[in-house]
Image 1 (cartoon, rainbow, N blue to C red):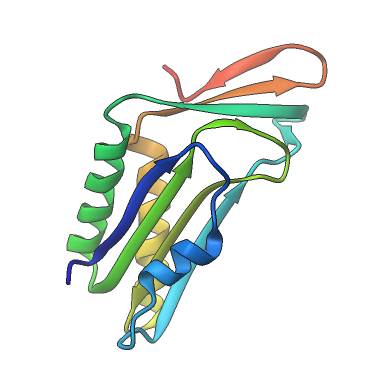
Image 2 (cartoon, rainbow, N blue to C red; image 1 turned 45 degrees about the vertical axis):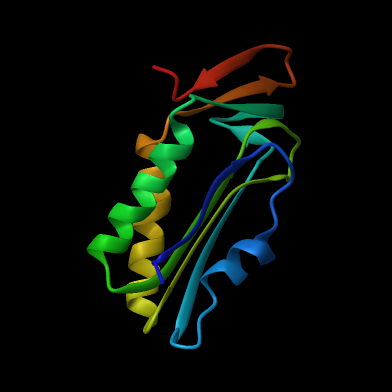
Length: 140
């Protein structure tokens, strides 16, 4: 069975349990899980809502990142799901999970997974502030 168990962009609420279950394995001694949520502030400004947009290549890029992480760590399974569309404060925006035989591998791989998703997958955040203005993040 491939180590890549789940990579998706979804325009509906994300299930942390679904992502964790995707990496569950009898050989796993550890599961590292990252959950990114929408916070109510950014750089000292109050955020009222945000929206994620994705390039048509984003799903393929998400899978590529997962494959690279799986290839560079002795993991059992990898899963990552990112939300698109309009989100409210507190909503889950991204869930990443990695299972491995030991916690140090699971932690390192999960950290690399979420860092690479944020750095390389073409997903852009549009933040709305309570002052009435807005900005695009990661859209350079």
